[in-house]
Structure formats: structure tokens, C-alpha cells
Amino acid sequence: MTPATPRVRHAPTFFWVLLAAAGTFALTMGARQSMGLFVGVLNTSTGLGLASISLAFAFGQLWWGLTQPLAGIVADRIGAGRVLLAGVVLVAAGTALVPLMHSTWGLVLAIGVMAAGGAGMAGPSVLMAATTRLIPPERRGMATGIVNAGGSFGQFIFAPIAQGITAAAGWAAALQSLALLSLLALPAAWVLRGSSNAASPASSPAPREGTRAAIARALVDPSYRMLCAGFFVCGFHVAFIATHLPGVVAACQLPPEIGAWSLSVIGLFNIVGSFAMGWAVGRWRMKSLLSLVYAVRGVAVLAFMLAPKTPAVMLAFAAVIGVTYLSTVPPTAGLVAKFFGTANMATLFGIVMVAHQLGGFLGAYLGGKAFEWTGSYDWMWYADIVLAAGAALIHLPIREPRLTPRVAVA
Image: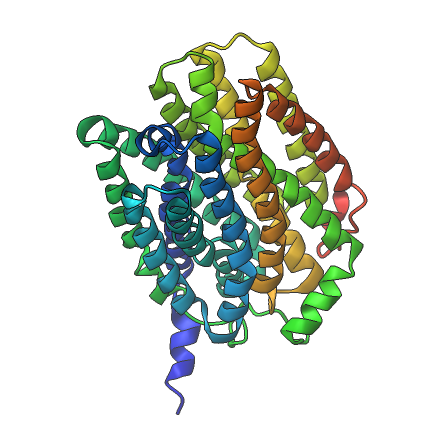
């Protein structure tokens, strides 16, 4: 008699897997993406200068990515539950310590190492891998879209909450509140426990290979490298907007509430984009969907630069960006699973996330430097357009496996 086997087979259910994964992503991403609201007040409070503040955020972008393959390796070997538990605690601790830091390196520690590192441990590589491990293959496209939408929902909810608490009780109280809210993700560690090496109804029938062999095979695959290059561009876009959109709003001489509402609108419309992408990945080629997303981003930025800077234009721009904001994640994760199966997915998707966050480092840091050098963000928007065009093109040569007849229609 083996009582462990029935527990693995019967629990958790589809609903609980999605609630745990999407809820964790909502809480960690909501806290992290709302940090951009505090760039200005941190600059005023510490007197460190925008470039120094941006360095802490930029390091956070980089560290969030670097932790993900490491977290993926651990999750693939000992289980996602312990990794998620440690990650959520670090997010809460780092966020709570931000108001106590008055130096550049103190902010790097709180924002860049603890909060961002924790969010990376409880981030997409571990959550997407746990979801694909626990969900049957025919439901994975929509499932990853729902999990991705969870991060967007967190941003939609957290940004106005943070702005409201800041107005009522101050920015330090707002950060402490975000820290407490992130702890609500702790129960998800139990729901998503288990590793990719454990038996599962959703396990891939492909023969297993070691972590080193899987990484070596991935890195010599041109399609995998092109996927990483495209995700680098995504990171540049997302980090620049998440960190500096409130500053863009201020530079356009719009009320600060527009910055909070713009971040919230991005989160709201990314829910739409995530659900739509989760539905689309089962019907069209994922590489084509990724090319379309990056092309839409470039056109949206160009239209924004040419339009008058009014609250309506800012919110409309946020809505369009929101649809494309994190909708790159389901097809990117789906391509990794198509290329290499699910046994080492947390590790291999984590490496793709490193590329994403290398772009994120540059987007966050260069945004602050560009404003200090030129007094505007125009050159960052130009870079966004050029990179979007490049990303749209680089996905086209990817050799995407055709796993179902429906995919072959595209």
C-alpha cells in the first residue's frame, strides 16, 4: 500500500492549481510592479539622485531574472513549494525594509536583492513549470494564460491601493502594507509542492535528461537563442515602463494620479491580453503571435510619441501597452515546453527569463540616465520602437514544432 500515490493523483485540482499559481503571481508581481510609484518620493527622501534610485531598480530587474534559473533548478529537484515559501518571505521582508534604507546600496539590498530575488523565486519560471506539471497538456495554453493574468491583476489592484495608502498615511505605510499583502501568497507553497521529477498525470512522456545536458542542448539550439533575444527586448520594454511611466507622466505635466491609474490600466488590459493569448496559443503558431505582439508595441509607442500628451491619451496608451505587456509569457513558455518538454522547464524557462531581465536592467537604468542627460524620455521611446521591430523580425525564423493538427493550420 502506498498512500502517497493517491494524494499526488487526486490533489490539487485544476481550480486550486490555477488559484495558487495566479494568486502568487498577482501578489508578488503587484508588489513589485507598484514600486515605480515610489521612485520620485525615494529620490526626494534620500537625495540620492534619479540615476542612483534607478540603479537599485535596475539591479532588481537583473537579479529577478538571475534568480529564476537557479530557483528553477532547485524546484525541479526538491519541489516548488519550498522555493515559493522562501521567495514570498523575501518579497515581504525586502519591501518592508525599503523605507529604512537611505543609501544607494541599502536600496539595492532591499529592492534589488531581497524583494526582487524573492519575486524571482516565486516568479514565472517556477509558477509556469508547476502549472504545466500539474495540468493536462490540452489545458496548458489557457492555464498559463490565466496564471499570467494573475500578475496583471496584481498590478491592477496594487497600484491604486499603494497610491491611496500613500495619500492617506504616507509612502512608508504604503510599502509596509504591500509587504503584508504579499504574505497572503504563503498557502500556495503547499498547493504547488512537488517537483518536475515526480510522477504526475501531466508529465511529459519524453525521456528525462540531466540539468546540464538539457541546458547544453538548449543553448546550441538557434530557435532557443532567438527566443531569448526576443525576450530580452520584452524585458527592456516592461522594465522601462514599470519603473519610469510615473516619471513620464510627470514630465508631461499631468497629475500624479494619472501615473498610478496608468499602471493600473496596464494591469487591467494585460488580463485581457493574457486570456486572449492563452486562448490563441492553442490555435496559431506561437512564434507568429510573438511577432505580432512586438509589432503592436512598436506602433503603439510611435503613436504615443506623435499624439498630444493628455490624460485620455496616456490612459489609452496604457491600455494598448497593457494588452501586449506580459502576453509574451504564455507563448514563450509554450515554446520552451514544445522544444524541450516539461522535465527541466523551470530551469530552461528561467534562463529565458535571465535574458528578459538583462533587458530589464538596461530599460530601468538607462531610463533614469537618459532623463538626467537629456531632460526627457524621448530617446528611450526611440529605442523601444527599434527594439520592437527587431523582436518582431527575430521570431519569424524560429523552427516551431507542430504538435497538433490544429497548429498546422497557421
